[in-house]
Image (cartoon, rainbow, N blue to C red; front, side, top):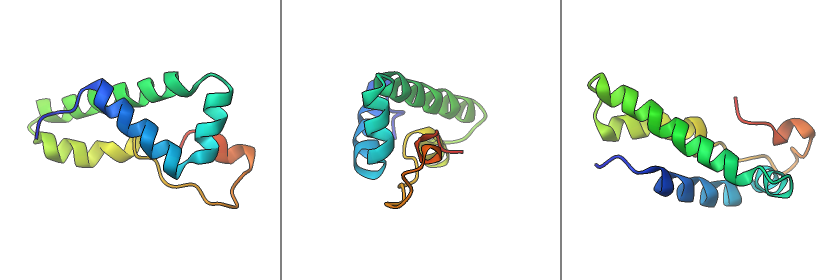
Length: 90
């Protein structure tokens, strides 16, 4: 597996968030923060993967370990429309 670039990771995050975190996606888009947050998530994921790879982790293992930290955030609950639901996942 080749390490995805920032643009590929950003596309993946955008699609995932739109489908699985529509409230967060809409809020970030409405406040003008969507692209910044997507870019940040992609860069953080790539940097974390590169650190793991430099320590001997395979690219696939690094991807599997880091992809859910910032890119593939957990699906939101339908009933969870509180302001806290709009925060970045812990």
